Image (cartoon, rainbow, N blue to C red; front, side, top):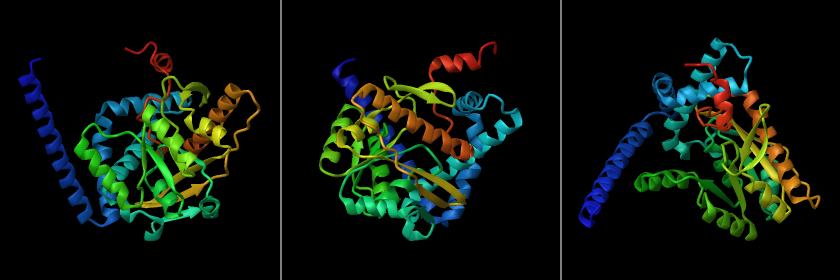
Length: 311
């Protein structure tokens, strides 16, 4: 491709990004004009209708079959609709994050004293969680408790939309981000070395990760939180978020997970990863309709196994 052709392609891409960002702004304006619960309900209605038409719906169905092989078709369909209801609410609530904080009265925090202790200690911890309910509420609770914390994220492909996403998160107090990848790993080391905690989602497939059990099958999990806990001698601090009704939530600060340093580093990391997987699985089993089932969590071989014999 010649220089002029590349220039034109870049200009067209930039125009497409700007139009997409304008659409993002329009949707945001509409949702912010609505009462919080009305906006949440609108998102649920839209995604319950559109979600089942997507490829992600098929992935979610396969995931449910892997996790709950004995589950009947009717129950699986109900959970799929519950998932789209919750995800639609999350999508519609995203522009309203500044209204979904502990101070707003829409979020109750269980074991808040643990966060207060972390903030007072000045020592970092590695927060861990998964894609539950409206996961954005958890970092809002963390920073609202006075805990300095770097939050990992995956940047949107569209840089204009990504800037707006960051702005939404800034509105509820999250100021620091550590990009994923090699650069992010270095940023997390710096953060913890300076006494800041880190927060990670630990429930997605991670190629090159550490093998561990999850719903009776082997998955590969990002071991970064465990490695950081071992390096800095800190605990893994699990958190979860539950939807109560509409756009109201309960954020739970669970018992910390202590990663033992026995001298066998590989074994210690594997044990920490297994503990994280067990925590995530327990939360999913408690409220399966609020986990994001559309991610391909298991290795390819597991999906081939569950679809074997199907046309």
